[in-house]
Every structure is written in structure tokens, then in C-alpha cells.
Amino acid sequence: MSLGSDDLQTSLLQHATPDVTLRRSGSCAVAEWITSVKARLRSSKNLRSKLIALVILVVVTVILIMYTCLSCGGGTQCAGICSFSSLKPMKLKADDEVTCNSTEKAFIGKNPAKRLPQAIIFGVRKAGTRALLEFLGLHPDIVVNVVEQHFFSNDVNYSKGLEYYREQMSASYEQQITIEKTPKYFIDIMAPERIYRMNHSVKLILILRDPVVRLVSAYAQLVAKNKENNITYPPLEEMVLDENGDVNLDYKLVQVSVYYKHIIHWLEFFDLHQIHIVDGDKLITDPYYEIYEAEKFLGVGHKIQRDIFFFNKTKGFYCVRQCTSSTSPPCLGETKGRQHPPVDKKLVEKLRNFFEDKNEKFFQLIHRSFNWTTLIV
Ligand code: A3P
Image (tube, rainbow, N blue to C red):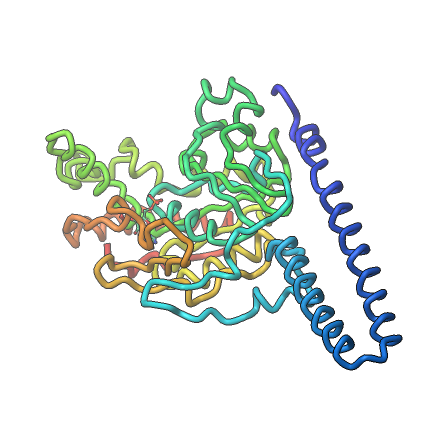
């Protein structure tokens, strides 16, 4: 490790003070000026000049309030008089357009810096990791790292050190938290210990989906990727069953879905309360609920409102209403929400039976259970 996380944070904690000082001294000067205007107002005998002074006083007070609110950026620091902007209900402009006062990332006068992530989405692949990251990125106090870093799961990347890793992060302001997501971490044997060494109190987020549905989703991805190279990927049955007709544990997609085997390694290093589990199936049907729960876990305050999500019939998934200032598309790309191939009912049953006891073991480890028996594959 080239630089410990504590060292990094200490060195990066030195930005706000001059700015705050400046703002305070500016406020004092204006306050003194207001007092002198008031005094003049009292002493003046002329009604017209009293009125003019009164108007100026009102205008300056409004400007002062606006300046203070803009400076606090709408983030968690905003309180009292400024909170009206974040609490105001959003007025929809069009079906997919919204004025996102409460979710706009406007921070004035504070130095952005690249920071190590305080939270990591560490899996599971094809459970909705991208949707989760994108949705959390709507929060004004969250900065997401769009590119999967594969830092803790790749020896070459890891050997470059934490300073390299920090450099890969998007810049954030002091009051924001940075989130990285690399689904591969979940199944990587080295990742838990390496992440622990970076920051033993890091917040970990794991999104899960019915293991059978997840497997089919991963399979559909492989079929699509091979098709891009004009390669026909073998049928699911051929891949997922061995020559005796049993579920093939050597097949990578099966291995990934055996969740208990992976979580064991994480629980060696982290307490369960440090790991927030997102129900990926529920994220599809009710993104607001899962994002609200994640906001609570991250301690960022509730800012992502229900009406920012809308169900897009064409996509078949929830998408995000555009902020008037936003340039990003409302729905996830075509690689998310693919059509799954039809899977024979008997195969689904076989897979469900195979995963039943493995899921039970997982539920015991995480002290929570999911109904993974009814979903359509
Ligand atoms: P499918 O493409 O099989 O439907 P990941 O981002 O981890 O690769 O997960 C991809 C899965 O996210 C998709 O699998 C899809 O079901 C799920 N997902 C959840 N919410 C989504 C959303 N709002 N839009 C698109 N896909 C979403």
C-alpha cells in the first residue's frame, strides 16, 4: 500500500475552512450594512427615502438567503431556511422530464477531490448492479464511479496500490460519498481481505436476485456476446447439466449463484451489519423502496423521491425522469433488461431443487430469507 486511507483522508480534509471563513466574513459585512440601513431608516424623516431604504433592505435580505442556500449546495448541510428547496414537491414537466431541485449536485465554492470509496457495491453480477448504481447516483450526496475498477479482484491492478485506485475515482465534494461497483468482488477470494485492509469500516452493498433467474440472465448475456462475434453459444441445458443429467457445479454460472459459498469469505472480515442486502427482484418492481433503504444504510438522507421513477412500457423496466439539466438517457442501455431464452419447465424445476438447500444455508448466514421459488425465469 502506498498510502493508508487515514493519511489520504487527513490530507483531503483541508479544503472547506477558507471558503467558510470567507462566507462568514461576507455575511458579517452585509449584516453590518443592514444594521446601518436600519439606523438610517429610523432617523430619516422623509417617507420616500424610508420606502427606498426598505425596498433595498428586502432585496439584500433575499439575495443573502439565496446566496447562503446556494453555498450549502442542497446537501445534508442545508437546514432551516434552505430546506424549502429540497422539501418542495417536484412538478412534472413532461412524462419523462422533471425539475430535480432536490437531486441536483450544485456545490459552490468547495474543492472537489478524488477520494477512496466509502461504499462498494460488490455483487452479484446480473442482479441489477448497474441499475442500483445509476439510481443511487441520483442522490446529491452520492458520487458513483461508473467504470468497474476490478481493483481488489485483479492482482495486476491491486499491485498498483491504493493511490492508483483513488485516482480512478470520480471527484467528489467533502460532504458526498463515493461508491464503486465491481460485481466480480463477490466471488473473488482475495477481495474481502483487500477491501478490509483499505477500510475496515467501509459500507458494503450486495444486490441479489433469485439464483436461477440470475443464472439465466448471465446465460442470456453470454449468448448475446457470442452472437456479436457470430458464434452460437450452446443451449442452456447442455451447459448447465452434466452427462448424468445433474446440475453441473463446474459451470461458472452455476458457481456464482451458490451465494453461501461466497458470502462466507466476506463474513470472515466484515460484520453482517456492514453489509446491506438489496433485493434485486424488488428493485425491478419497486426501485423507490430499495433505493430508500439504501439511502438509510448509507446515511445520506432521503432525497430520491418516488416520482423520479416511471415505468417505461417499451423497456419493460423502471426508468428515471430526466432532470431539466440532465444529459443522461432515462433508461438503462439495451444490455440491461434483455429478453431471456425460453427455459424448459423441467430444467427450471431441477435448478430450483438444486439451489434449495444452498439458498437455505445462505439465508442462515445473512439472517434473512427471500422467496426464490416463484419467479418466472
Ligand atoms: P436482464 O438483462 O437479464 O433482464 P447487472 O447490471 O448486474 O448486470 O444486472 C442486469 C439486470 O438488471 C438485468 O438483467 C435486469 O433484469 C436488471 N434490472 C434491474 N432494474 C433494471 C432497470 N431499471 N432497467 C434495466 N434492467 C434492470
